[in-house]
Length: 359
Image (cartoon, rainbow, N blue to C red):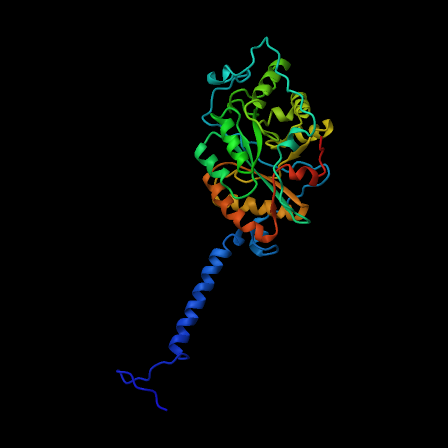
């Protein structure tokens, strides 16, 4: 039967006509491109193993076990000056508003009340998701508490992140309590002496020129600023952590309190992790810095490196900071990485996985 002519005299196109097939093909191509852009955008940086892009962005890094040798890293990673101050060979003095919190020089350092049972790192640990045979990654965000807006944004990350709070931040105890209530583990980010004298690590920093009593007082002050922590890591400290004489009493006190030590490894000369192991202190060391360069591309590459290390060795620890580029990429990566079989865990979950002391 002849088709009913249109007003123009041309036959009407049916459901199978070329014109509608052409529109359907265009729509399918458009949807496919959109799906690739949205679903595969992160895979461009962290995509399936063996892809050319992944190989280009993920340098091979070796972390031998059980006694890892520190990886090469920039000497001054996080030890960038705020504004530089004149070099001062004397120990860094506490800020005026913090002075009243320090024990008087002639008063003994307060002792920790006895707590029977588990060490503090285990009592304050957050539950870890199951990860049977899957690679595990612990993300630590340093410098928490100073920039409250970005610290709050970091706390909203939908993953068990570990937060290292600077003890001299204002309202640090309440900020830390909020983070813990949201399911995150806590570290005290203790300021320690850098190699460059013009870089100020902050009030009550641990420096190599202190007497044993002064060091004990400053350490007690730093450890007393917030509760519910699993341990500490070093803020700056490229000079302090390279001194076994300086680090020994700090690590001995951490062991007495049942706290773990995370060596941030701001210097290739650090003795912190090695000495902690010798003393039987629960300890870990970071593998990757996420944001030595504050750019989205750099953070994406370092997250890809972290993921590659976790797949190769079973675990990886990355340290970042509450910066916009870091948080932008973290939010996307967290939403995407789980689909690739990687489990994000609290820091304490890696103590057993890495065969570290549990005391």
